[in-house]
Amino acid sequence: MKRILAGILTAIMCLSCMACSNTKTLESSSNSSVISSAASSAPESSSTVSSSSYDPTPDEIYKNACDLYNSGNFSGARSTFEQVNEIKDTKNYLSKIDTLLQYQGTWQYTKYNINWEKIIIDGWNISTVYTDEDKAFTFTYVLEGNSIRQNVTSGDVYSIENGQLVYNTGDSIHNLTKIGSAQPIPTPKPNPKIGMTASEVLTSSWGNPDDTKTTITTYHKTEFWYYDGLSKYIVLEDGVVTSIHY
Image 1 (cartoon, rainbow, N blue to C red):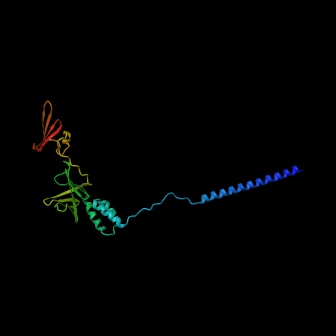
Image 2: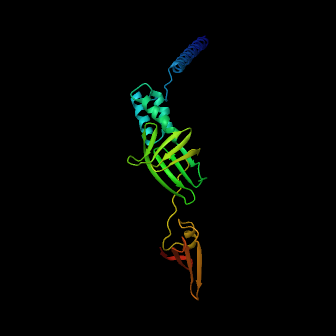
Image 3: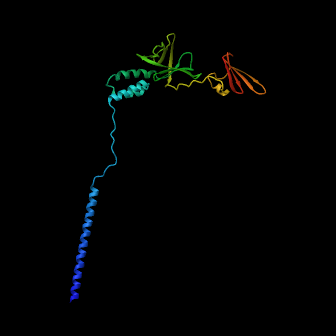
């Protein structure tokens, strides 16, 4: 009898322990679900910081347009002035730019078939270019009404008439036709100097000689290169310039 009672008590205790264990498991599972739900519903922190773009003020745009105008970038200045065309003297600038843009480009003489001399107007610079000698003389100019004057004190004045550039030197008047946009100004060739090789002399400002004379000895080869009707010459020893005579 005692054994039967002991067995019944043991069975009751086991059932009680199993119930407690199941309760703890359910609580743990419930808590985990709550934590997971809370984590998923929490707002995500953004690692990207939005940056706001800066819009320049009308005065800043106007100043930038003036800088472009003063540097000779007339096309850039016009498009910038057009953004603020109601402030200050913007309309006056736009009128000047329209005039200046007519002069920009490469101009060639229309008379006497002169194709080796051109006038190039680029920004605030005006250059007379001699393409046969790769020489160029560059000056600044000022705007006077609808005309431009080379330097402030020069008498050389340019105007646009019937699509042509009219160049008035004070002593003569020349007409030029635009043949394209402003071409690069050629780099002047160097003058010959002692120590140059023969090939360097040929690519110098003197170029090919009009006449030559050569003397050959046991030890050296001496060459005389004559220019401008023998009025000046260069002496080369073994292909190197040793003296220049004017």
